[in-house]
Each structure stands twice: as C-alpha cells, then as structure tokens.
Image (tube, rainbow, N blue to C red):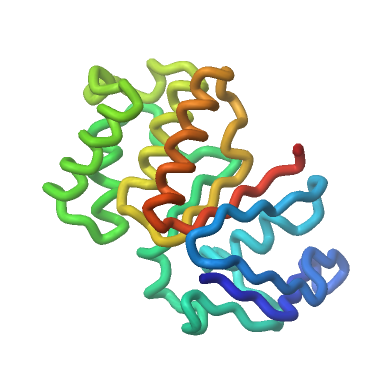
Length: 191
C-alpha cells in the first residue's frame, strides 16, 4: 500500500535533520506502528504523506503510484493536535469535512449517522465541540477522520485523552476498519 524509499527531510537550511534515508513498506490491510521518541521524525513523515510538506529527496508511492495530490482523498489523518472548530455544531462539521474529502452532502450525512450509532453519540449532532469533554471531542475527531472511508488511515497518538472505555471502543473500530481492508498507521512514542 505505502512504500517510502530513502526519504530525507531537514529543516532550518539543513541544520535540523528530521528524516535520513528513511524507508518503510506498509502492506495493504495491515496495522503498522511508527514507534519512536518525540523528535524521531514520525510527524515529519506523516506530514509528507499528507502533502503538507515535501521531502528533500526520496520516493513515496501509494498502491505503486508516486505520491500526488489525488491521493489526499484516499487518506484519513488524525493529528495529535486536533483541529476541529469549537463553536460550530458537530453535525455541520462532519458534513463540511466530508465534503472537503469529496463526499456529497447526502453521503457524508449517511456515513456520519452510521458512525454516531456505532459510537453511541447520536444525540451530539447539534452540540458544539466546546460543550464536550476532551475524550468526547476525540470521538468526533475520529469520526471526521474516517468519515470518507479512507484506504489509508493515519492516527497520530490516537488514544491520547481517552478514558479506557472509550480507548477500547475506538480500538474495536480500528480493528473493524482493518478487517474491511483499510491500511492503518499508528504513530506513538509510547508502547
């Protein structure tokens, strides 16, 4: 699914090396862990995959095709620092982000309702993010990330902020997505 060969990335005119000859092969339908301490380059690599930044050199392919802007629709990315709108209703946010990923409003609505049922949050549609606890907001961020049914799902510190019950609920959904063929990358500095 995802192949990276000899990827290099540095910042500050080459003074800070984030990735040096980094290579990885992530098989289709797998759950793959990027494990390393803070500063190891995990987030730099994730940002390259999401085309937020570009590598200095190296090759990256998805399904054998060189990484390009069309791949953005196939990727779901939940960053460690969550990025939802605090004063927008949760339902409106889901429809907005679904449409940004190329979904029709009706498809986004249908998928959102499925996820709300699965996560037992169907009564949150009109709430604002600012009304939710951190763990509840994490559930919404997860739904935003998977709403468009990405082929490649990248979760940066996915269990941060979850109480054990919700962590298990999300873990079960991650395993279900894997069974359905989604390739998943989990990035963390903790085992």
